[in-house]
Image (tube, rainbow, N blue to C red; front, side):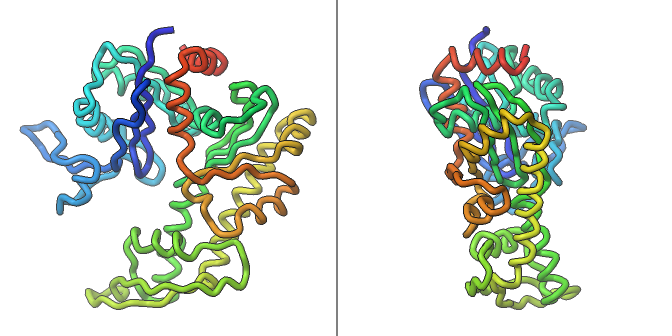
Length: 324
């Protein structure tokens, strides 16, 4: 196997890059401000600089779909900053649903001057981030972020899995719509996300509240409104019920031996949107499981780093999952 010394996670919100033997060398927003230079679109600002520039910025992912033209402009600047070149090898860790774009990710790397490139589901890196002791058994991972990744892994091999369009972004959008319809206040996406982060709960009778501001519907007048946990409780329960149903559907496609392994070992749960109050109890009841291993922090890049720092493990994962 050719040398692989950089792992790239091009996320809906944040792009992270890990360098073998060093650690995370870049973590920045997946945002860009572009301009025309002649007839060619070029980057003016990228990452956090794009968001704070005062100019209208674009996101590499919109409605869960990647714009490879914007991704090329963004990564060109990021790769230049950390000096990734044609002698380096890069592995892209992507959502399960984005594996259908494997050729496009390869061409993206080639256009940036990288000749050695692999594309792997990010959930495989998540496996190593959890440091699962008995990796030879079948186990289920659920990574709830902007969207949700559910997969069953055995001995480093992806058995089955799915990307589910339920998760943090959907909750943000539904909160924004609810407050506009019921309160007449048009929140920014950032304010809707703040409501989710501070109030979302899977426990009934939660009485927390916050005050947020936005424009009064169809006007330029600014006002504030109080939102309670109870008001968005239904939205949150619907989203996480959809996730639990998707987990059960993935399990239903597996044989009895795999289901028994998962029943015995429980599920491994992570992701930014898994930090919600009451999630462990909720999933134990919905999925009829006794055990949940829970790490809300970004275990995917931890696992990506462990794979990069262990060429034998990386080669095994690449070979087991049919990558060329």
